[in-house]
Amino acid sequence: MFQGFTPQTLAFLKGIGIYNEKSWFEEHKQQYRQYLLTPMRQLAAETYETFQNHYPQFDLEPKVCRIYRDTRRSRGRGPYKDRLWFTFSQKTEEDMSSRLTFWFELTAASWSYGLGYYQAKPALMAKHRAKIDRQPQTLSKLARLLQEQTEFTLEGPSYVRSKGDPGPLLRDWYNKKSLSLCHEEPAGRDIFSPDLAQRLIQGYSFLAPYYDYFSHLAQEQD
Image (cartoon, rainbow, N blue to C red):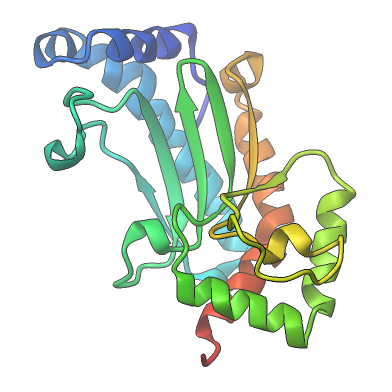
């Protein structure tokens, strides 16, 4: 059961950010396993079990990322990530970056969680705009719900040239290249508490209707 991260968790993340090399990591591998990897796995498992029981129709699978960077994409940043995260998403042949995903991420300075795409496919976002054009009611309801709360914000890059203007409520949604609903805050006392799991479950439950909307959108014909 997840009991919370610790100051040692943040100390390791700060260290790997500074000393991103094999010798330092091997010397601190036990700290990595004890203070970062194990509680991250516990948090993912506890959150996933409850959320999946509430929303079995989503058929998600959990995954905790590896700390080892893909050397082909490291771009001189060292062999290790300076953060760790877990995700819940459907198992498909799509690349992970284009999947609709629930996530939690921890760095030495902050933590975040939410729902969205790392890089949505242009075809999906075209469907998104087309559905707003022909049937804006459902997304309008979800957009109002988002405005009425303070936990999550709509994020993601927007097109330089506007794709259209469906009105102030949906304008930002309409002109996103990719999108996510995200909460981020400094790494403070919340991550040291076992209550973090319940907060994630509550947040993911709020986001469930948005997952339902976009997952059905992906299945619609072009």
